[in-house]
Image (cartoon, rainbow, N blue to C red; front, top):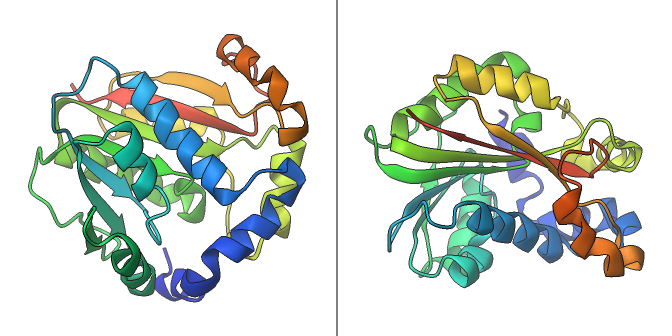
Amino acid sequence: MDEAEFDRFADEYRAVHAASIRLSGESPEFFAEYKVADAADLLTGRLGDEPAILDFGAGVGASVPYFRKHLPRCRLTCLDVSRRSLEVGRARFGNEAEFVHFGGKRVPFEDASFDVVFFACVLHHVAHSEHPGLLAEAHRVLQPGGSLVVFEHNPYNPLTVHAVNTSPLDANAVLLTPSSLRRSAERAGFQPGVLRYCMFFPRALRALRPLERGLHWLPLGAQYSYHAQRS
């Protein structure tokens, strides 16, 4: 993970992101909320009243308002390698989350500090050889029984591949397959997890989105999620 690479886009992150997803007809806010809302739904009944959540690779804090909306009592920590992104996030949401710098190797928290570790389209920016170690750190800071929730771009969706290949934000990204993510998570010590494909319909076809709940098995969604627990 290159801190300078992410610092470079911190002040214009939303505009660059919006341009890269214009074919979807949706805004960056739509995708940020989708992931948090889906995670909150997935975790229903698994969390206490004030769960500790680590947003790993939180960038400028785009997910913060949606954690406050869907999990309003959570204790939220935003972690990122980009100091400039953290500065932007802290200026926007400093009263709603803690913003912490990550040096790239060891997460600066004690063992079993969190109930949930959340990765929102982060791992494709990280060399695949580093995934097991990064996920092992996520495993370490999770409570026993805690949840890992990962969203990633689907390399089997051609529109997603096009968006990634043409976005300056993803200049050095390498998409990962669900099977690769699963192997890395299990090597890191997680129990076998649940894979779900998502985001099938662009805004022009949004009337069909209620059908998505029956399509999580179909490997055509723009993204996929993976949920696994620490034993």
